[in-house]
Length: 157
Image 1 (tube, rainbow, N blue to C red):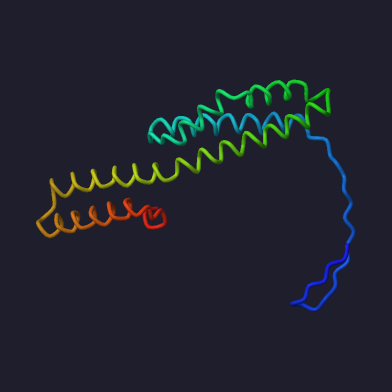
Image 2: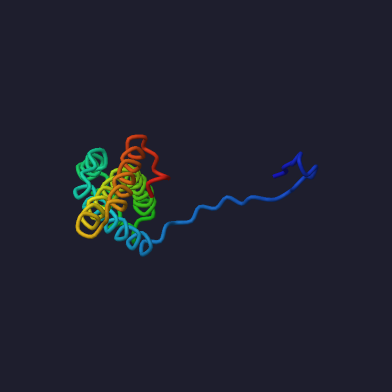
């Protein structure tokens, strides 16, 4: 392979050797176990945050044959290279689905956490704050609600 990089005005030469490695069944098993832990974490987070989109995504993953395919091909992966390759592919698909669900949960989780902090702040200010601190807490609550309304995740985290 030869590549010319105009910015550097240089030509680079290299050789690429395409090799197919058979997936390791032990690694696939550990990877699947990690993804199942992550699946349960994301699922419980979806319930606690009431993220409708994420909850629907998790239900779709659970109802789809994806996890069952991974389990079946994982069981055969030690003896069958084709099953190991199928397991690796389906495991990647599972990871992508979980990533999508986790991403969909990020915003509702931030909103819920922010509102929990606002409730706590209001309670503390009501019990121990002076009028200036109460006004500051109200201003902060207004700013946070504006950020939530504008969906500015960077300002909320």
